Image (cartoon, rainbow, N blue to C red):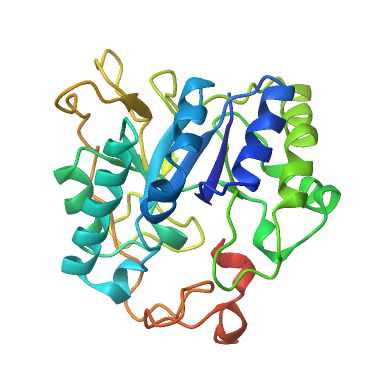
Amino acid sequence: MLALTFDDGPDTRWTAAVLDALAACRARATFFVLGERVRAHPELVARAVAEGHAVGVHGDAHLRHPDAGRAAVAADLAAALAALAAAGVAPGRWRVPWGALAPFTAELAALHGLALTGWTADTHDWRGDRADAMLAAVEPGLAPGAVVLCHDGIGSGARRRDCAETVALVGPLVAAARARGLEPVALDAAWRAPVPRGNPAWPDPQGSPESPGAPAGSPEAPGARAVRGAPAGSPEVPGATASAPAGSPEVPGARPGRGTPARPDVPSRVSADALG
């Protein structure tokens, strides 16, 4: 199996288009959403869940953890989870913006019963590449247990104006996966493969870069679950999560005013392509 994942939505135009493309090829995916956009478009979250996709949390305002600090990230996560709860979803997975982990990220994840979730293959769709070029670049990474990173929303610092090429990529990407015997599924109870907890381009100082899939026999696994009354119990987050290396350079795509430059200002010593 293989997981297609989409960050930075929901977007009223492009998330809907991605959902249409997934429905056309009968594939399942996982959406890591921003709370501020969930509040604007809760109906898209409801649609994703109704169509069999998983919904995870990305954040509320796309903070980079090492720069923002624990208090700001804790408040940001709480706001995002509240937005999702209002939309009827209690997520089990958290993909932090840019996969940039801080020393406190794992603690916050465990506090809320969230499994940190990175990726193994990156489309780099934020650059505005054509769908055929993205497919050619990502195909070598289509292997059992692969987690593919895409975006259904436009983030600050992106080099594209829309997500049309990401939408165009969905069908061919699903076909390429199936040609390799890999069925695109949601990151939910059926997922057992290990998943990086952050950006795989960064080393993990604690030496444990991956978290396992859902524990065998666990009553609930990471993914989206509908909220019915009080939130259901959440799975424990396996292992500790390391921070991004001390002194890591600024990460591309940060929102202006949050202490991190946009992608064009990335220091030359780090390739933007390596950062996802």
